Amino acid sequence: MTELSEGRSGALAGAHLTPLVGPHDVRAVPAGQLAAMARDIRTFLIEKVCGTGGHLGPNLGVVELTIALHRVFDSPRDAIIFDTGHQAYVHKILTGRAAGFDHLRQAGGLSGYPSREESVHDWCANSHASASLSYADGLAKANELRGHRERSVVAVIGDGAMTGGMAWEALNNIGASQRPVVVVLNDNGRSYAPTAGALADHLHTLKHPGAHIGAFDRTRPPNLFAQLGFVYLGPVDGHDTGALQGILDQARLLRRPVLVHAVTVKGWGFGPAEKDEADCLHAVGTVDAVTGRPAPATGPPAVSWTNVFGQALLEVADEREDVVAITASMLRPTGLYPMAVKYPERVFDVGIAEQHAVTSAAGLALGGFHPVVALYSTFLTRAADQVLMDVALHRLPVTFVLDRAGITGPDGASHHGMWDLSLLGMVPGMRIAAPRDSGQLRSLLREAIAHEAGPSAVRFPKGTAGPNIEALRRTGSVDVLAESGILDVLLVSYGPMTQQCMEAAAQLVEQGIGVSVVDPRWVTPVAQELLDLAARHRLVMTVEDSSRSGGLGNALAQHLRDHAVTTPLHSLGLPRAFLTHGTRKDLLTEAGLSAAQIIYAVLRARAGKPLTPDSSTDGIAT
Picture 1 (spheres, one colour):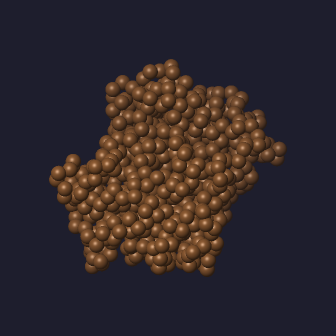
Picture 2 (cartoon, rainbow, N blue to C red):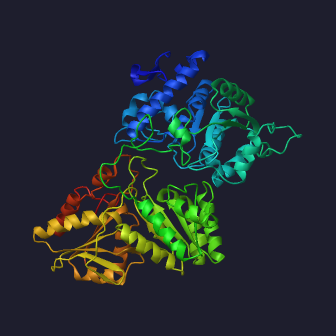
């Protein structure tokens, strides 16, 4: 591979390239130098992403495709939208942002997804799958209404994201129009895992030798996209810049809905990614730029929340044949892989289709099974209607397991699991648990699956599960973790914030302030024992790694009012805002959720002062 250097304005310059400031420079590169340019970009990506962490495999697979897009289309005049957005790193390089990769996904640094704040070439900050085609449909309509008929709109979507229902809603509309929308189907045969289902079978037919199907060739088997109104072009080698450029130029000139079928290899050009059958190094932490492996652990191996859940679910599945599991194209990331290996017939990966996953779970429950739906917290919000109307309305025993709840860190605003509790808290009959440690995760998962009168949810954060925090005693369903004998302050915590509360309580007790720390275990329904404890203290403070709007603090305050409990209650939690990317520790501190900040809030509350000088209903604390 050729060496990379940095050109003016921090833009990328390879051994044979002039410095790239924007797409106009990409179009000026002679055709004979494009292969060297692609090699330079891959070298750059491997070195930078292995050093900072980020989405490596998806970006290595779209280097030539992105170069070709910027040589054919005139961004930002022509809108280029990347579905999910985690494969937009090459796009960022070609639009003059290479210098930012030294701080990729770090506080104040480059976002790991498209960002309207970063560049006019990023039309939307999309990072949830299957949305690009709807954006494209709307932009094409806007161009038509404004008389910009010469402009094109391009949506780059993977075969994994194409399995999402929203993508098909958009295809239905785009195909019936005559607007110039170019859908580039980046077909690498997988999302996190290999793409499954009827769409994958159809794409295989289109790629198979002898099965090339033209849009109007009635002698061939039917082409689904052609039947939906698209001109189908392809399949084309997604790693041949010249071939891509030719077919994309043809699509641009047609001035109507076109689907370009580009066949790529995820992780292309980096041996460790190509050989990684699990996820092609889809998303990596800091890893070796030669082997693709993390640095050897220096201490005892850390146990992630996800792994604890996976093993705990397998134990329950061993005991109960009616327990089944569903995920949306995230078998390994959500911890279902161990169960899928042992009980493949009882684990269902439905593709990137959270709405379908939830209602399919409802059908399984109607059929006498107890489904466990394992999703990232941020993705459950896409299926809010299905949770409400398809599961809860029927009081069905479905357990939702929400990984990456609360602050997740470097993936930023779209991936923080901040809203699940607020949304699920409104669902009638929904029981929500938040384990403070791995022992409680095992216990609460069993309790959730044992609940047959309606839906339940178990939420836990990203990262490593800390040491178990043993309870002094349990009253009802509430664990009392610390008590000093003086009933001054009741700290109510759940989930991972319990450790900070314990640290804060110890220091407050040293200052002569009586503090009790309790973990309700079940956030909803609010336990009567929690109300009784609140009534016996002079001040109640809730601490949660969730949005304060609709969180535990709000629910407990409402119950205190309903039961005429007059103890003042203050809540600490995440603000009603879109939080940026950074480390989990730093973002929690910014939200006022460190042990020191909890102490500060307690002292101000006891003095009758606002918890922060500029407290408001949307602030960190009131």
